[in-house]
Image 1 (cartoon, rainbow, N blue to C red):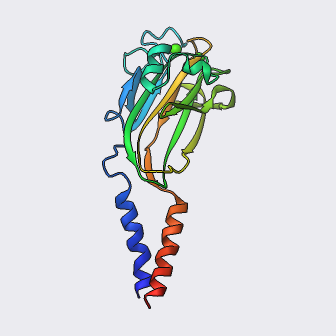
Image 2: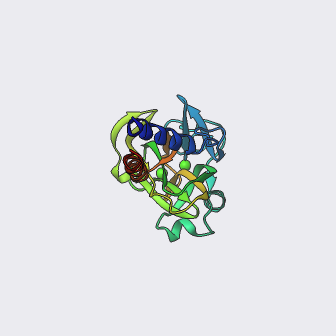
Image 3: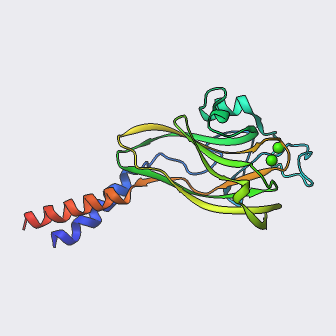
Length: 214
Ligand SMILES: [Ca+2]
Ligand SMILES: [Ca+2]
């Protein structure tokens, strides 16, 4: 009886522990550059507001993408941080949020990269000052969507956090090499949640505890 009840109770406790204050979508995230909500999903582009960097104007907000140095500052990189990470960023847009995580938690989100570039534009995250590329134009495949020539979708899952912590996550898209042939990133819900490993571990502990109490 107890064993049957304990695992659902633990899972409910963990679900509650997952950051209740966390907010999924822009505009609650702070943003820089061309950042909007399209079809209820955060939408970032590297397109100028005057439309001069594409055959058609891909800018959504009327705000220009942010230049390299200011973008580095926003996402939490030092000056020269993009180059140091191997990304020759010209301009881009980003969203960021600071939130609490518990030891063992991960965060995960789904993304869709859209591009008119065939070489090196990219989407990235910066987690507490550490740059990670999500995708670049060379791997996008022809698939017209939202006015772009190519697209690629994926899911990002972080490593489990070792300790309870307050972390800052920035997610962005950027032109690299030059500022033409825009790219965009759609960011679906970002969710901090207990890792499967922690869920399994606590589930087994609960099962063992229940057996001991019999
Ligand atoms: Ca480009
Ligand atoms: Ca551009």
